[in-house]
Amino acid sequence: MQLSESVAAASFPTIDAMEEKVDPGGPLIVVFGPSYATAAGLKDVRDMTRNHPEIAAIMVVEELTTQMLQQALRAGVADVVAAPSDSGQLLEAVERVGETLSVVPSAPTRAEAGGAEGRMISVFSTKGGAGKSVVASNLAVILARQSNAPVALVDADLQFGDVAVMMKLTPQHTVVDAVASINRLDAPLLQSLLVRHEPSGLYVLPAPVEPAFADQVSGADMVRIVKVLQSFCAYLVIDTPAHFNDVVLALLEESDDILLISGMDIPNIKNVKLGLQTLRLLNIPVSKLKLVLNRSNSKVKLDIGEVERTLQMKADALIPSDILVPQSVNKGVPAVIDAPKSGVSKSLEQLAGLFADSSQGRRARR
Image (cartoon, rainbow, N blue to C red; front, side):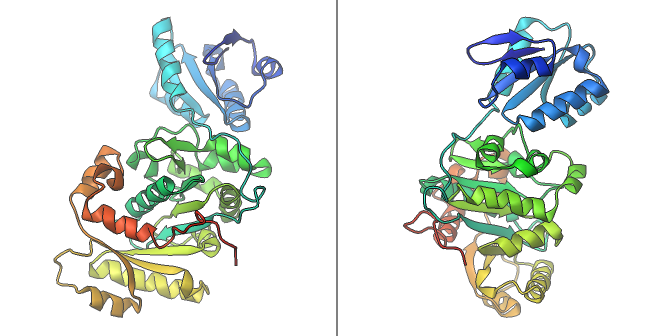
């Protein structure tokens, strides 16, 4: 096993020997030899990556198979290289993994600095394809660019979250890593799990890489995670799945604001109306809710006023339809960065203006 930093490298026979000599805390890359490509070895690697999220693992294997690759990724390994491997190939893997290590510098939490908890905004719809992830990611980018304090985006669509792909991120850690450390989760540890979106400065906590991992996350776990994030973030934007479950309900109850996203078609509006009825039955305050009509200029023989009457809500934001949105998604570049002068970007900036204030998101909790 070889440990590599930007300035030094050392060899150790075991993980225990490495932990005795190395003081974890900063970003490190550990290269594991083929002897760790076993069930027992992968378990040790998984335990290490969960206990030390600031450490990235690379594994050298005798034969690179699809099964071995899957097992290694599930153990938290960032890259797998087949042996015999020349030094150039291994160095490329180290450099590639090193680019994914993004750690937020440790700093006093907002609570410690005398500030209030960050404002939590959940983006929700009861209909898939309404544009939740597009709205959530672009809103978070705008707030991050406007705020002097950190802003975080959490992908709470635990089975099929797309935020990392939409923002062209290659994260080392996900929500599952935060849950694995839930009993000792604090601001510095959670900061080390976030991946930074460099063009905007936004910090992202991605969804699990496999749908099956969603079963490991409970509503209580997510509440714990967002509470810690609120301790050092000015704003926290949550991208939720298009259905009600214990995670979604827990997050909606904790939210300061809930953006309800609706498209301009009958099935969308019907589902949003049902969702509104459910929220009212759950005693979610109406004051939290804001209606966002996506693709509002679509020529579908539906009037905005008619939609508002059906939902018994005034629209707080109208986002026009534009081909640049799917184009920006395919590029992995948020629309507000890819086309800042477009009508879509201006509408999203107006939406962000509903939350921005001179105190950079600081507010007293109810």
